[in-house]
Image (cartoon, rainbow, N blue to C red; front, side, top):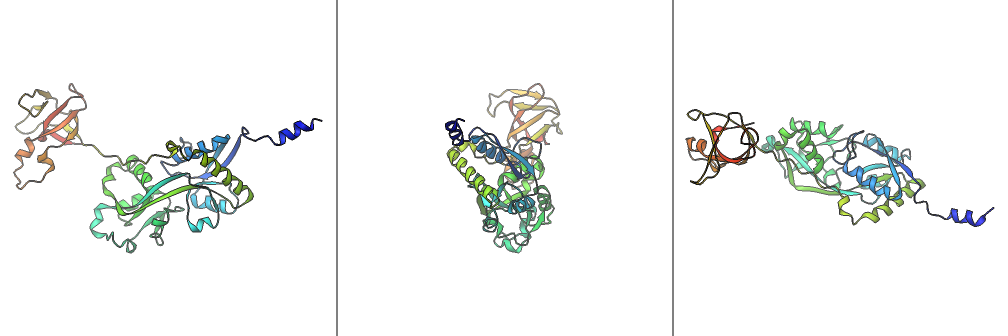
Length: 325
């Protein structure tokens, strides 16, 4: 028997041996996408961190509250991503920060006159079951109405069933951009309260849990200076005004001009042509001291043509011909 070979193999590093880690999570777009869809930005970060040692993740979708309880009882090896709070840290182990987010408190501007943003605690809050929003915002949520997910919670805010709703900024913007674009301008934020918090992997306080957290922390240290691993914040979509060109009384032909100078050229535009408003005229944007709006109607706004024979041209068109879609 070759004892030197046995001793050598016993002390060889285990790098290169694939290992799969079971991690509980749940949908939290854009950070965690729905099951059977491409990974979200947070899931992708953890995947790349663990792949440094050829470790892979077996994702299991569970309610965040349930996943936390399973980890705390040692029945689930890990769960992710979680905000760190004092009470939670008494029951589970936390990795170092994997990524960071900004959270805010939102309200419906339709009911702004009824709200006292200086005394938020006297108003009705909503929250999502199993979520923490960081300790800065969580202190307002002791009596909050609980909802099963962000979509239901946001719909409640839009219906004025609650006054305020906390949410991570990128999560709110993703919801508004993808599902509630028509109502996006109704949602405003409380500027004076903002939470900047980190998200972590959690594991049970067991020998196996300690080993996992130690390993993950080492791998996080190796990538801490790679800024491109951090998810970029999702910006709220800024709606652009699209208009259809219509005839107006006394102006059956729709004419667009190339400049506002005397050397301009003119194009005839077919009715129904669609345009993107680049800049509304001052007469539309600014208030008037009179209700005689004729000048406002013949004033010129700057547009780019989206279809028809003059597609792509930037022109100035009289406001009376612009019907916002």
